[in-house]
Length: 250
Image 1 (cartoon, one colour):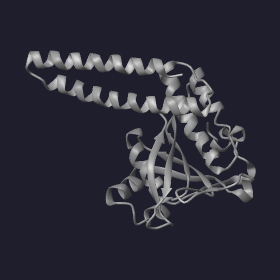
Image 2: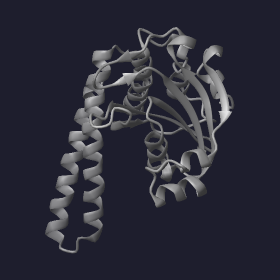
Image 3: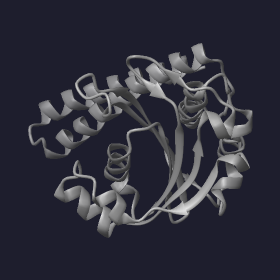
């Protein structure tokens, strides 16, 4: 895990392995004051690991009126606390318009984040972030089968290379498979249709879990016994819904 380039088995022709300065990121005018503070105080290291383009990877580009995959960049980011994950990911994805794979490192914890971006129809040089997909953190020191399987399948030389979009989507597929495995207890390799179905279920589970957190907070604050009972019934119903969805995961 010390060498992410080796972990992803990145093609030598695509390796960059250079430090990116915070100044280069902070000069981006789209960052607000809070984001610039996170960049300055929380992020400890940014490295440009690899650049995949048709000329050096032999993977064709994929470009339409709505999206552009003429390159894929892989960047590692070290920062101080996982609670800043959302801000750190947003800073980097906002700052760089191309398809970007972020390898997140916080001490012994590791995660991957990607973003689906579309071409801004007002300004074709800009990108709109449609969705950000980030994996749960795994402990680098843990050798359990799920973590080991996930890391083993990050070998980019086994990825679909029909075009750069399909190459990039391999990362999203693996994130969804990892999240599914954390709930089912087993890391399974699936086809695109199965992963798409699981991704939809995972979103529903996430929404239910958010609602459960809210209900638990209400229960702690509630002083009327009958209302507390009703909230507990509602919480139990959500727990059942969540488990039913988990059972549908392939």
